[in-house]
Image (cartoon, rainbow, N blue to C red; front, side, top):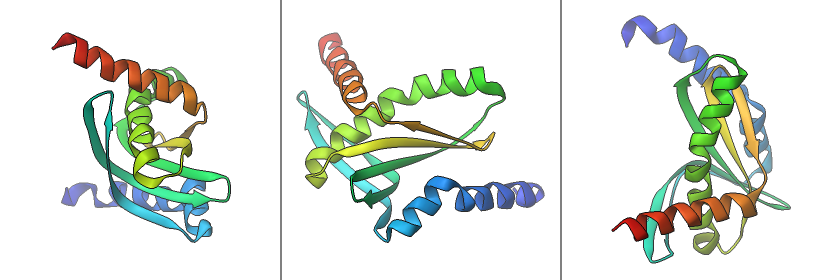
Length: 138
């Protein structure tokens, strides 16, 4: 890692300067590495939210992604793969916090892209169906 310190430092600085992290800091109510856990469809879903912050109209989940991606197609495909992950976080957060998430943001460090998902009911449905598929496969 010592050879890559400059690259790593640049990525960290970009994350700090990103719009979503600035939103979090300006909200005055942000939390890092938040543990969430909730029974969903009979399975305990748990994880750590990289960043969670509160705005007047709801909670925002931020998930840092370190995939090395190039191009819009790769970003779109990778986002689709992570949708269930984001939805599961939102499902677990709702009963844990007593407040629903209003959006999930994937902060891709390479290629420095923020992807905002606001279709929370669809994310919930997709995550719930995925959890049910795991139950049914047992």
